[in-house]
Length: 377
Ligand SMILES: *Cc1c(COP(=O)(O)O)cnc(C)c1O
Image 1: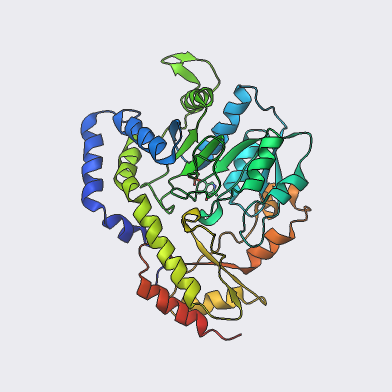
Image 2 (image 1 turned 60 degrees about the horizontal axis):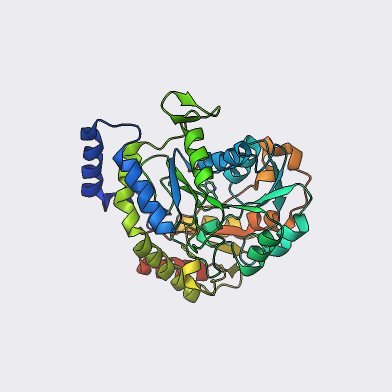
């Protein structure tokens, strides 16, 4: 493949020596659960995101799920309460809600930003709505002054799914003094799945919050419900991050800002270069810091998405689709199959993700754009 979609081996090779040293540190420490690597990563993430508390976790799904479970344990929400979530998100957002025995209320995204809008939230509100889950999909912040006003007026908890958006900064201030994705709402989940902008060498995630009681409860839930050793205040889980992953992440975390800048350059170059009447490029946010371009997602009209994808493959360009089937049309969610979510359903037929990682040079962006421009309707 001349232009691979994503080549994790190449990406991680750039850090090979430091990753090796970090792994050696853990091996030699004798601490294989918890310990200083975890504590340091938590501190570094809190500083970076302007949040008071970070709990390192096993993965992004567990982080989301345990935030919701912790709100239940604190009696701020109850079983059956409704959580508003965009219908075009990755299925993990919805799974976290149902695993916590809450009710997902799927709403259509704004077709331009492909994110949750205040209008859509407003239209979905019921007396049982307790939580809004903005998903910063593809790395674009899902937050604006209308959403901030609405959640404030309705006293809704805001749980960000920031799995794809580490390093993104909102132009509208968050609820608790931070504008960084992950620090905007009351609580947030981040994922360090290997393909995310900052990826571990396995599964890892984090829960972020400004609320000390929530942080304490999430931490207990992630560790068998234990607050101190052999003392269990809750019927908890085991959702801890491995220290070896914390050590890997501490190598990569300082790169976040530079990495986002490089992704923005590639995105802007695609937008300047792609000129094909079938193709709509993603809208650039007013402030470029609002997007970290986890994915660069074009829309292809006239039912030609799959044909363009095949054409690109024949020309050596790897692509992906995020996501080909929305959660409400998955076999596991048959109960939601009859919902009317036309935007999410149209998007899943039209979207195509182009290569945008550090494996893709600006010359590659030019080459890929030329190939797209040579695709005839
Ligand atoms: C990756 C992802 C998750 C889940 O994170 P994992 O670490 O893979 O469990 C949740 N939500 C979104 C939007 C994601 O992209």
